[in-house]
Image (cartoon, rainbow, N blue to C red; front, side, top):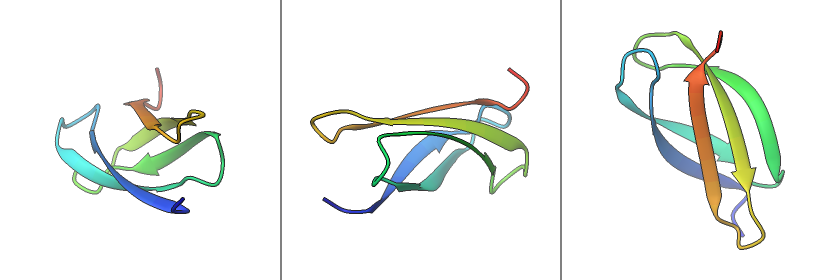
Length: 63
């Protein structure tokens, strides 16, 4: 299993598709990362299930 994985998400502010780098050594994560296009803070929820499938949920920080 790779420790880092790139995932493409849509920014909840500007709708641009950006790439985020995930640390897959932790099954569940919640953190904030700035959009590389509009610089707005994106709240990311990352869940890795038992089959090593990665789900990323992106939302505006104030939601």
